[in-house]
Amino acid sequence: MKNKKELITFDFGTGPVPAHRHKNPDGSMGGWVANTATVADTAYIGEDAQVYGHAKVFGNAKVSDNAIVYGDAWVYDYAQVYNNAKVYGKAQVSDSALVSGDAWVYGNAQVSGYASVYGYAQVYGNTKLSSGTYKE
Image (cartoon, rainbow, N blue to C red; front, side):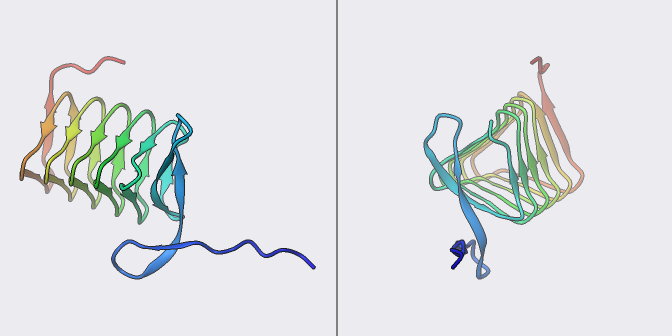
């Protein structure tokens, strides 16, 4: 008799979907990631953070605290999304950009360089926000 692999699901707010816990580069247990989303082995997902839909988190990006990345959003390079922040739609947060507090970045917005979005700020539509010069 073959063993069946148990299907693990998590409810991201719209009903349970197949998902898994991310294993962080330091070996710690990360947050929930839908099986339809992509998170690189090099990325950090905090224990209470969530990534779902077709979102991608890669490079050395960090999503922590109660932050959520979903839809078709991308968070990459050394970008950080934390506290209660949300990045969704087709938004992109890259380089060393920070999104924190209760801020939202969504739509087709792009936040890059050393830009910070925090508090209750919202960056959306086709906005491109960048600050400083990013060097890897």
